[in-house]
Length: 213
Image (tube, rainbow, N blue to C red; front, side, top):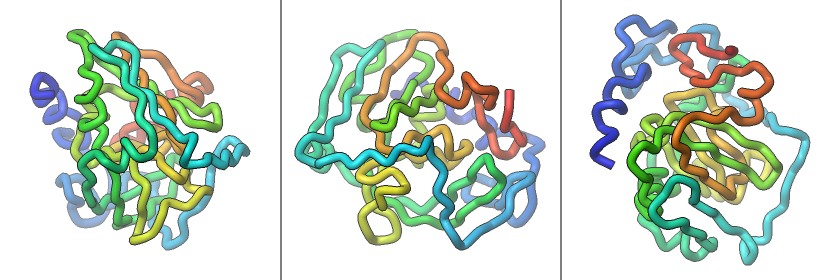
């Protein structure tokens, strides 16, 4: 994924000269709390009102679209991939932030490399078992802290927070990471997801207060 490195480095959460927010610098040099956010100890639950219960024997993740080879992973396949641990923050567009969550999962970049995005691939559309979808630029998805996680704070990811597996996007608002993820579609060009079609920002940069389109 070397061809995306310059775009990753130039992304707002890494290169914005005037980030909005408060508190000491975070892991990337931005203010700890983005503008308009309040730190919380609780982890509120927000979803579409659907709570899909997925039998791990039937769980699968499809990676397709503008790729060299479409891939379908079982749960065993997913757990056999390189696993990483990371600590990051979770910023919800509804103005709360939960800090220093300890995650375990697979980097999005590892999954994308299995399928091989075609030249010209620019965006991703992620889908959940609940019918949710959300889009983001490929350079955002390929950042090292964007994971498909199955563990949080030392235990399995709870069902209400997207278990058995969800995507996290620490440098964007959290709606950009699908709960109960089951498909990653690589796109040439952009396509809005569920909330983007309903007026939310296409880009979702917390340190720009980039909530709505």
